[in-house]
Amino acid sequence: MIASPTPGNLVRASGILKRGGLVAFPTETVYGLGADASNPAAVAKIFSAKGRPQDHPVIVHLADISLLDAWAVEIPRAARLLAARFWPGPLTLILRRAPGINDAVTGGQDTIGLRVPLHPVAQQLLRNFGAGIAAPSANRFGRVSPTTAQHVEDEFGGSIELVLDGGACEVGIESTIVDLSRGRAVLLRPGRIGMADIAAVLGEPVESAVSEKTIGAVPRAPGMLEVHYAPATPLSVVRSGDLLRVIAAGDVVLAFSPAPDGVPAGQWIAASRDAARFAHDLYANLRQLDRLGCARIVVEAPPAEEQWVAVNDRLRRAAAGSA
Ligand code: TXA
Ligand code: MG
Image (cartoon, rainbow, N blue to C red; front, side, top):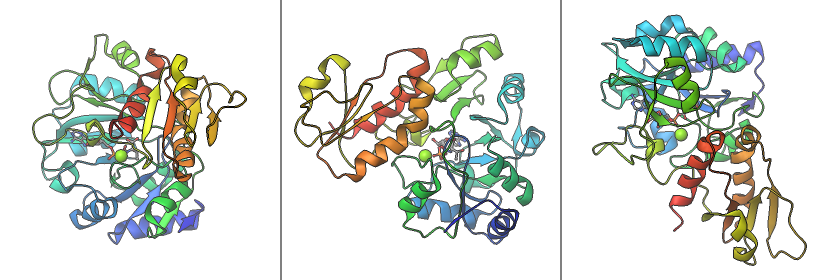
């Protein structure tokens, strides 16, 4: 059920978490499906609700940076610098996990993903609850992340007891993930915070593992699976110059300019040319086009520039299953 984040509903939400239940809540990136990170049975409920494989690790959300040492050990200076600069905010750090942390959140790995979110509702919930909240994006496995409370309801058919409504997520795509557990900084998932931002704070170049599909048998980040963030409708990303030539009757389009006269598209969304705005709207736009049940979603390729890296990554994955 969707509920506004009144003080009463925030108390209710932390009561549900304490009882081992699930609560969906807004963050500045996307909505999360939260459970008490210290309760393995509660975390298991996230996996079954999402239909997600049990060996995938989930991010633990913390109220503030002071809790870092309770969850991670051997924390490198780079992690302290990045946390000081970007937390609260859309950055997840992968660190060596502290002893005693349950395998349900780490997927059995010796690392843990930690993030301090900025959204005021997430902050309030974390403070009321008073402990770590494990939360992946509140969507079914492999699908487009939700950026509104209604998207969460649509994903789970109303089966989540409480969905705190914090409006549309400001960033709109998932957090940047940086792995600092390997003695150097490795980007696992691009996001609003870019490689250059991270390198500037660290004073050294950052390696990217984003083109790696998996490491060993288990993906280090499910977001690294080729097919991910995908609508049900097949999706193609096409160069601007090819757009009008490839559109067939019944296609729906996400482009940078309004539809020219006479184009056969079923629906046409003219998206922002600003990368941050495009990202903010991306998942809502994909959901809107997906709902039409058309043959194909055609997306005009954004520029191959630094500020578009995260968006291009999500589009490439959304298209990967639709060869
Ligand atoms: O913006 C976000 O990060 C959102 C909001 C809700 O915080 N959460 C999110 O969670 O996107 P999820 O589970 O959909 O993606 C988290 C990613 C996964 O790809 C997961 O594998 C990776 O973080 N991750 C978590 N813990 C990890 C670990 N110990 N080692 C490597 N990757 C990890
Ligand atoms: Mg996800």
